[in-house]
Length: 504
Ligand SMILES: *Cc1c(COP(=O)(O)O)cnc(C)c1O
Image 1 (cartoon, protein in one colour):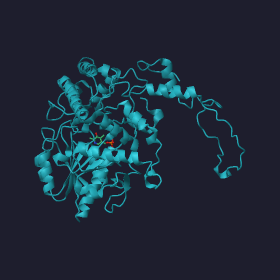
Image 2 (cartoon, rainbow, N blue to C red):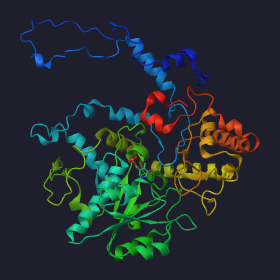
Image 3 (tube, rainbow, N blue to C red):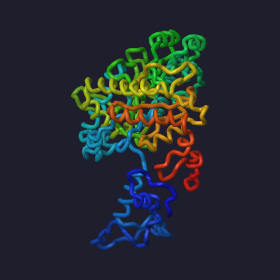
């Protein structure tokens, strides 16, 4: 296969060429990775013919070196947090220390069978794992100010669905039908989707001039048909919703419940607790705030915390502590909404979160929030004159863990957020989230995370400033980016549907 574009920076052309080959193309008949010894006992019974293949299995036939080099070269074509700054707002991979990977690979955890706790002779072997789950629930309660947690949901959106189902169970138990869930337009897009899947109609409230909940519109819409108000905090504009007290009081007056989307809890860790602010239900993303790398659909975990009044509806199974200090699983919960996921959720993701929380401790978690917010504000301050006017109301002076800038002012030169994103790739940076939140024209949503150094942030700012200047002086230069990747711009819709025809 001929390379038609310059090779990615830092990659030898030969490596890039190898990476473009499919593993099936390097397959050679009869080549093997491993050679298993033949059986040293006589074969006693032939397998039933119906279990035998009638055509050869079309797997690539390659040597061990072929496999290792193929996947290593492929991995080098990708951006990753291990190679580059990755400021993908909202869904950022935050701090993912390697030691939590070690913790989650301990054989005592990986070799456990999930059925063990239910077996009389297995419960003993599972005590450590059960204790870890129990302790993680307690720690998350302490961090968020909630009374109980379930660790079962497998993702943020799955946690939202769980939370809204708990809210529905709460109203059902009071024999009343509520029809609506209120979601501000600055909420994460999964919020209205989750509430709709749980059977509610959505009332959308636009943000006010400050980028937060419009109180007048909320009061207009809030009544006894409303089951809950779902708030993302900080919201997708990177702003803290500063009228929560008032909103919670209004909601509770009509016994609507307050839902907190805490996917990005790293913005407020140790500074405030949603449970103290008046929220009744919360989900967290362990795969964002608590150390599990994500992307590519990898394993996630979206634990849900609730106030006491919702405890009896939590999914089974629950981890219970016996009077003798041992741990067991409790299924005797007649009002539970049932199973949300098999067993106890993504256990090894929970192991990482537990290790991470213990490692950082109270002080460390507080520092996390401070650095996340400081870094985002550093970028906002440096770039707002180049990429201002984040929304109709203008650019905000301060933000939480992420800032939302806009390329709208560059549109007059024919330059869009996408062009800035592509140019950043040539500068060695992963693009920020673009065109989200939807309420911001030409949005560039930047989340630097808590662990980046000032030097890295400064280099990123330099490239962003250079891009803004180029947009005015030589917009064509932005249109041709990226020049350093094996392929340039893809038809993204086509890329998802037809991998062979994605190249423009
Ligand atoms: C990422 C995110 C979600 C969804 O989490 P998934 O694990 O991707 O389902 C929800 N809300 C917010 C604010 C998020 O950033």
